[in-house]
Length: 280
Image 1 (cartoon, rainbow, N blue to C red):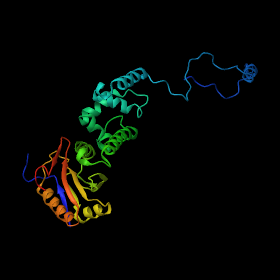
Image 2 (cartoon, helix red, strand yellow):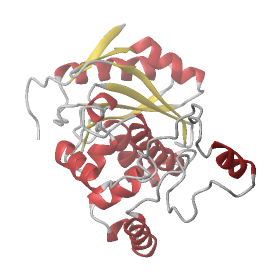
Image 3 (tube, rainbow, N blue to C red):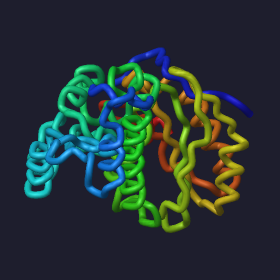
Image 4 (cartoon, rainbow, N blue to C red):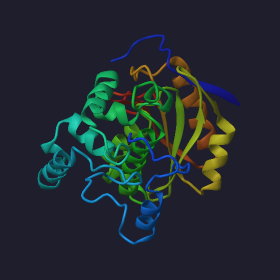
């Protein structure tokens, strides 16, 4: 049976010119030049002070970068405002450029550090001075944060790490611009054994297949599952489609001895628990 979750609630609930390579005219000092050219050390500019064409000039903002790094090491992230934290992230991508103007433009465009890190690639690339290297740094920070948060809950009983689970779900899905449907698979001791995104849809709809949900639970030998999906609009109120599809999954899973502990809807600002609302 197929259905979908939807973000459409029916009822709201709480020059120097180079020397010519041609021969010199008769009577010139070509022989003398030739002799000098053959002798080692002759003809080379002494103390010219020019930088090699193959070496980049030193960064002019090295002092600022060092001071910023030192403040971060001593005081941590709390010692830096969002734009300076973004500067640190941008240092590797823009190794010889002042990163402060770009950091401030990113915040002006997206609103916060979290929203910059979670911004879609194509929106980042719309800004001046943002290239693939900058996009890669943003994705790296996000991936590292999610891997850390996932590591804190994987293999542990969720009853003792429920707040961490909610934070992870919000970080993983709350800033997405399209709906996603995710399943957390638990063993008989309610430990998280798998975390999978089952489907991705549009801005207000994602397809869900009851058979596939139950099938994946059986393949993981899970005895319980937690359903999670996001509302890109930010309104985490469950829609009628959300409620009806959840009830279908609950019934199908129960017939096979699999419990549905909760269905969580996340957004940028928070989350909603269907169990907490007594909808399941």
